Length: 270
Image (cartoon, helix red, strand yellow):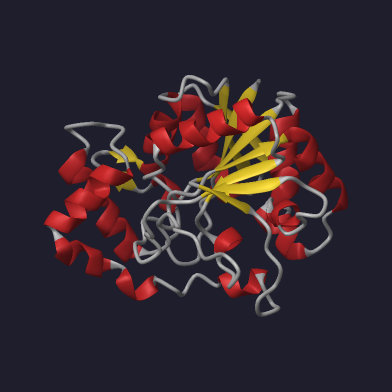
């Protein structure tokens, strides 16, 4: 199954401008995301999808310097940007990664991708984290924010691109798919333990400080360290968990589920 990984990346974050190229151990944050994806041999190509806005010239230059494919599209219609980037390769499956998640776990993504390929029964399969599992109906174990990864069948992505009208669905790419289980075969890989009280994404300075500390502690032993190593390291250094704890629960996911208890029929898989 031809598989393309697409990293959404932009400079224009209101809380932490240029975060995707912020320094971690002497390299831009985006470099580590690419390094982790390159370790997954089942991925045929990696594309960075950024906007045509002048502020994102720096991302295009980064891609050129590191031999990465770069697609530039709409700044606001991210679904169109993502779809057009994927369409250029005509893949059967697309992995969606965001540029503010430098701790994506290659082993978990590989497990997710192989499950998608071998079952051949999903249109969308994601790790249990983020907006997709933020409603009241999902009671399984969740991964930390920052481990976000989704595998999408290209034909489902194309339908979303054609039919999604809500601005929220155009900005965030996949809600049109995972909010319509009557139309798409959707599932998620749940965690054996619940890690929803752990935040590993980068939206602000405190997040970045935590990520830098984790990389300082773990990167040189194993460049592609995963969630298990991060959890062990934080257990040994509990004060680090407090660096960004005040942002947990403030992600704004309620915008995706305006109706309390809104129906949610993803199939949790342990």
